[in-house]
View 1: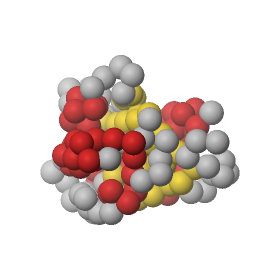
View 2 (view 1 turned 120 degrees about the vertical axis):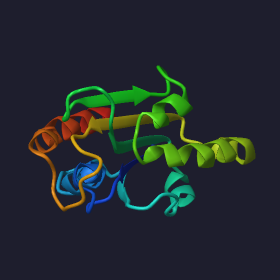
View 3 (view 1 turned 30 degrees about the vertical axis):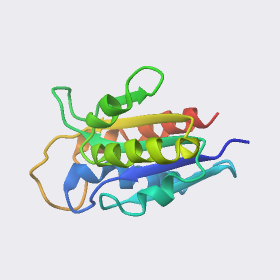
Length: 152
C-alpha cells in the first residue's frame, strides 16, 4: 500500500491564508486509511524534508490568490503541470520548490512518485485575524471531498 502524506499550509492568524490548516484539521476528524498521514505546515521550511520522506504520494493544500472568485478550488497534478508551475500557484507552497529541486538532485529515489496541489482562492491577503471569509469557509466540504477522492 502506498504511503500518502497530506500537508496543509497556512497561517491561522492571517484570515483566509490559513485554509490549508483548517482543511487538515477537518481531515483529522475523518476516518482515513492507515496509509495516510496528515500534517500541518505553519511556517516555511518547517521540517519539510522530514515531511516528504517516505511519501509515495504527496498532497499539498494551500491558499492561492489569482483572478478567480474566492472559494474556487483548484487541483494541480504533476501529470498535468510542471512542479514549479504547480507550486507557484499557491501562497505558501512555493517555498517547497527549492527543497524539492535539491531533493531531486541529491536523493531522487526519495521523491514522492505523485504530487497533487489543491489550492483555494482566498478573498483578502491583507487581513489578519482568526477565521475564514464566508466564501472560503463554504469551500471546505469541496476541498475535503477533493482530498478524499485523491486517496482512493
